[in-house]
Image (cartoon, rainbow, N blue to C red):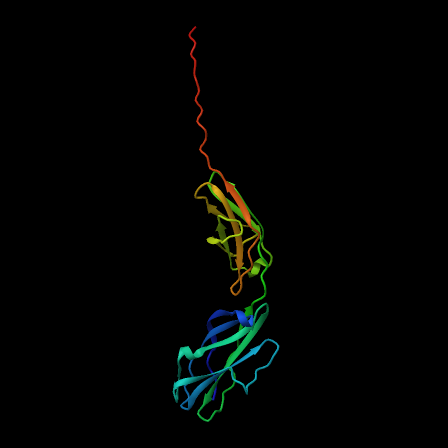
Length: 231
């Protein structure tokens, strides 16, 4: 029996397990079904970078919908594993076809998925300056490991220390530092802000808090008296 199918990862999702200090990672796989008349199931194997496959211990068995037909239920082609918080791991997968007598094919192509749960540093040096021309507060900040950042969220509060409400988002499309955004000022007041960086898997703690006092007053009206002298 040959495993002639191309194995791919369709999507991934992560769920936090606070008590275990880990995250559950669920991957959705897809491959072209085999066509042998005695095909019964597929067997998924998982290894972490630096380790080998344990072919005696399958990661998951995916049954065919009918013996002799290679079709499978896509919901069965999902696999969930745990990744330790604060670490990065490269996970590799292969799949084998198995017949009714439990003879297996060779490995499919190998696919891999990196889970990066390392702590991301907080944004620093957040500064907000009121722009009287545009009636906005203009922000700048710094970020270590910015290549890991997918986006920054801007949070606002009327009270120092929060609670904060998200009021803006900046996507990191290869931006160069310093990182910037603006916020439209609704009225006079004292506003407090913080910025949080997000990777695809984790998010940082709040940046330093930036407080900005806004006093928008109309220009004073001056009354001038004009005297005309006739000569």
